Image 1: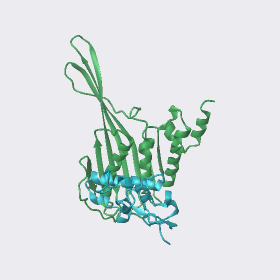
Image 2: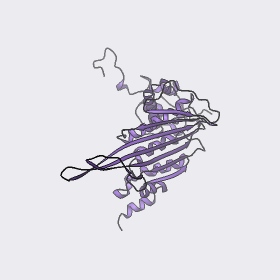
Image 3: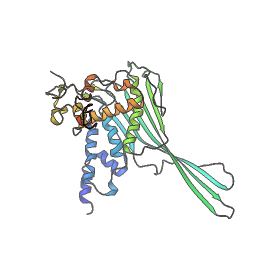
Image 4: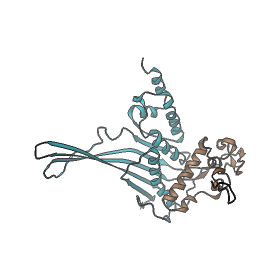
Length: 240
Length: 112
């Protein structure tokens, strides 16, 4: 009876689009054509669905979609992109770790600390040059609660929280790939190291103490970190 | 068969390679049917003119913006030269960029 048109529109969307609306996340592996179909479906959402309860989660159109588009343009003809997105946010059950008591002295009566770990995005793409690109973005929030009592017996409490974001990127090179150390080091906020093995891996990581203020800044940060492994190969031209 | 020479990809650059059906009126490169943008331009020339309505032109614009930004961030001029001279040509001053932003010369009334 209610929201009949919008329910019908939702039912016609891509299955992963529906999962984003109802479960606020999805995990899927598919080739570039499959992701293009999902993105086309997501772009139709705003015109057909107005109800707030069925709105797309934050970071969908401004972070997730641009990243999928850019990585899909690098996939080979048989390459697939795996995406695990959890856009439920930090304040959901299961993401908060155990609470830990901190050592205190008067007038502090008690202090406790808990960590919230939110790995909200994981990408794995098989690129057309034979390498494998993996991206992991994790938000970590430290929550502290302090209780204190003043000389007149009044009890007060205070909560504080601090959020940092970790971006990790790994590119596993093809077996016979030639790599070299880049001419310039990465910016100070990006760390890079090489893991030798049958297939050489180049890892880049960054910890952001200030959260990106916009979706565009978030995408830029992730792509900036993902750039570092590609500077280690002199020729970044694959087979179209 | 003349292959399409439009640059594709974001991190791993390559050429399209599909059979070309036309040429860009600005830079002359061969274009397949999927890479002809507004006015028959190639995606790079369209992006240089800020015509990013076509998906390929938008992709070219984003790729170039990213390479330019990260080459400054990394202080690595070699990263930007991952493009070949053919890719960079439409963005050379006077080659195809928006003329409003170019230097008017010493005898111009207003220096824009």
